[in-house]
Length: 149
Image 1 (tube, rainbow, N blue to C red):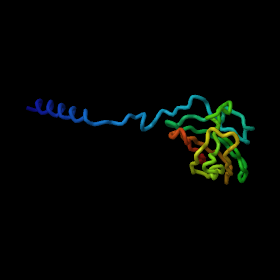
Image 2 (cartoon, rainbow, N blue to C red):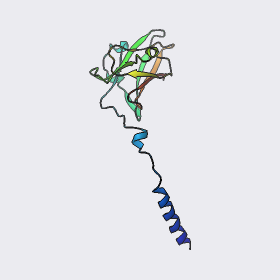
Image 3 (cartoon, rainbow, N blue to C red):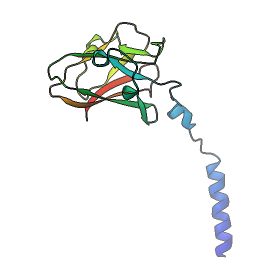
Image 4 (cartoon, one colour):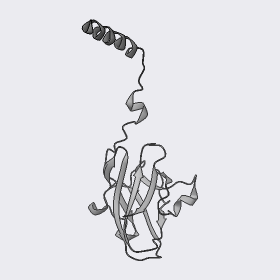
């Protein structure tokens, strides 16, 4: 009897599970892996693509780079770009939201990765290490955030 009940439950659950439509995980979290290295490039490193400022993937579609800002109150200017400043990989603030030019600690802004001149700026209140993040979960509107390390 116990075996018949078990078989009946398995059959019933199998029938039910065939009716459930699960979403394709790629629709929920598309694969937004970058196909090249990206760098934090700014006035603090003469706008060069340096290994110490290379972005590292820390989660799906999320990349981070570390930077030290040693002069409180100084306006630092930077962009996120590949080695060649390629179209689609040359990220600065979006003209859709020009207030995003001056980054505020902990607040995300939308980046434009097809811009030539729209650099971000950040004025640290204290010297120290900071993390610049770029989030590609929405590849058409990546978000940039700066946080204190």
